[in-house]
Image 1: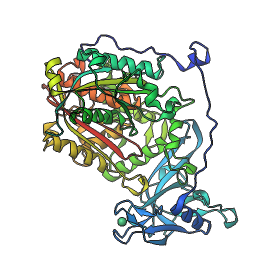
Image 2 (image 1 turned 180 degrees about the horizontal axis):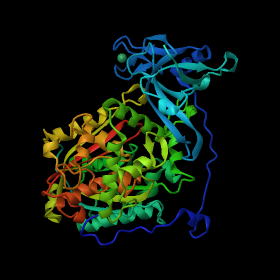
Image 3 (image 1 turned 60 degrees about the vertical axis):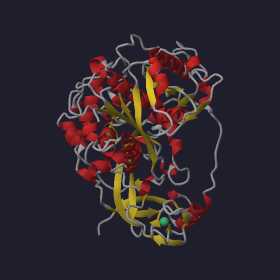
Length: 171
Length: 388
Ligand SMILES: [Zn+2]
């Protein structure tokens, strides 16, 4: 983008040129699948979700109560040295009302996603989850109080989705 | 002086930025690299080392993208590396080039950034779903638009910022891009157009967002000795900074990017800049979304926290304002081939400081400029200070 440059290379084509066979191309769809061990800290966290409890880890040096839990404190760079439960209630730190899916296609009904600062955890320790039973999405506000809605115990498998979503509560 | 040698940029090149380009990534890299060399009056045999920057392999569907791009980037039989720090790659690549030369190991380094997002379909957005934690975040369906929307909402809430003020950034940058010959989305739009565009993930709407793009950019870095031989107009890399924040992004307050401030302070300290708004004449902060320009102006200490919307409203950041911001048209107007977009910002500052920006030239004979890029999980920033 200099006055000394008169021509910028690049030959523009359209997405439909692929469909209409106007450009030559190859395509490929990967078939690899993955399975991840949840690890030391998060396996314990998921086990406790099955029991309807939210587990945090604690660091005796910086005194933080951390959720999601971890086996090391990234600030003090030492092992965490305790486990504790935090509540399944909290405050909306921020939220978004999404009208698009992960592949950018349009959704009929919006998905609301929020960072929820859980009661009992250190200041600002949030987790990300869905929000539901909110009525009109325009009424959702940062600072609103919310509570987890759990799957029935027999349906829990040890996954973050053992919490179905969070819903606003009046206190 | 930092390092053994002072480092200058002596040439820059870019391709068109477009939603789809027929050229392969290698071909785009070649065009940008060749243009940068020609502008520097140099040949590939003058180049002693090569750095390539390119963002997630998933866009191209080609693993080992560094190796894939090597020939096109001019790396044949040369010391070579690819760097990748998410969206921050485009400004990080010239930082890596800087240390190649500043260390005294090489006198010249060719830095090339390429992105080809169009290969991934139905939408490259989907490639971003695999950047999230597989156990706790992917089952929720996390995607990139969502985390931007979460951050934007938090920023708006904390400072009570109106969407109207944020939309002004999109209006400004798309208009600036009208004077940019490589721009993909140059347009004269209004605040109402932005506010009436379709909601993607509230508060993010269609015209708050930069497009997906194909494109490449390149710069030639040389030591002071070589700079004196090849040009009367070197642009010096006087400050470099980079920093990462915690990957526990739900444990951070997203209203302010501390890590941008840390990277900026590192670069300013090196450049001897004590009062950034006064001493910086032109800025290219990373603007993949309109609110990000504001967020990054604050992180770059170009204004106080929460003050960037006011400066924008008052016209301070217009091309003829006191502090021109994104005179190139930014990612919102020029396009966003991730790493190439970041390096395009460095190219723009280079051309602005050399007085070669034509219709985009900011007034007042600018001497000092800053470019910045941002990426990973809202946690990485790279900052470069250039001076003539
Ligand atoms: Zn600690």
